[in-house]
Image (cartoon, rainbow, N blue to C red; front, side):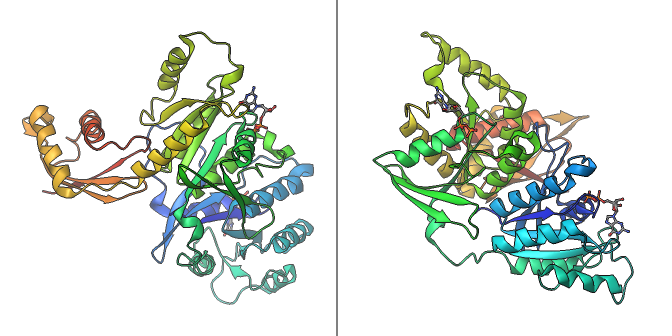
Length: 437
Ligand code: GDP
Ligand code: GDP
């Protein structure tokens, strides 16, 4: 089940990133050496009252005076497309300004749940008189918050969580595999979705979100039922702001959050680029199942060696996700689209696979017998026990005598053993390590 997505929107300087950091708390994700989102983080997973969700800060472009409104509008559109709940941040010190009114009107029309946050209410006690002016925005009761000090954020999160879609509600789409097709502009994402939707063997229906902006497409074929997540309004032609890399990355990020499987689409006529690795890094960090699709294969000049050489090069480029399958497809001719669906299915199954504790520990015992655990100054790593604690992605806990001794290389070795034995093609897996005296 994909996590609900909370988007933070608002004018520059109202305190969006400060609020984001506060809400993200210490749960800013495990940092590894995946390229992409870690340096310039706009997304984090968080939890409140045992509900997990992801937060996206849509801000962050350095604005010139004249483009502030245009950018704030673009952020709001993005949030309306892809978020489950929107937190609209304003500033008590400036009061509601004209741009706030305009954004409020856009958000209201979308019908998406919005929580109006009035930031910089720093003093405890009754809110300042200006606070009440925010009722004029027509978005209901504002929540006064001080992102710097942290007060009010609990009330804000209460409201946010109460607006999440009902998990027990509509069971329909949840049996489907949610697929996000992500990649840089012009890779052929919309072409692929249109091709799939146009196939005769497919039953296609639009699944309207709460807004008219996002329309996911349900597809049923011999490989199962799939929900193609509408990223940049896939079926319509992309918007101007899609050409700004940051927005296309944010769109990709939000689609990733809502997905079970990510199809990372590369333009085969262009080859690998930095942006492809950022997009793939998002899917990897989010723990999603992944398939790499090299598109426009019809247009690539090739001989008998091209595909192997191409694949070899991509394996190096995507060395952080050796588990992902690589397929050469054409959205134009439909070449290998059945293979693509098959790969999506398999990756989704791996991503939700559970292995019994007994079997895991047998494999662990074999692994330890084959390659001795590392030592340091006469002390040897002991792994007492391991167990799988969750899926999506499959996550394993190890109980060990010393974290420090559990070197990355030995973890890598165990990961390979687990993969060799149990599969897990197409999905990242995670290790958590607990030290026990
Ligand atoms: P963004 O552009 O909307 O992301 O805004 P920032 O988070 O970068 O904040 C803009 C400025 O407002 C920074 O100088 C923050 O320190 C300040 N700020 C943010 N939240 C608060 C708050 O709750 N109280 C006060 N006094 N200042 C805040
Ligand atoms: P998006 O921005 O990723 O959604 O890319 P589009 O689907 O709009 O495709 C960008 C361009 O690539 C369009 O001119 C498409 O006709 C072309 N294109 C997409 N898929 C293929 C393909 O498989 N083969 C060829 N030759 N062209 C393609």
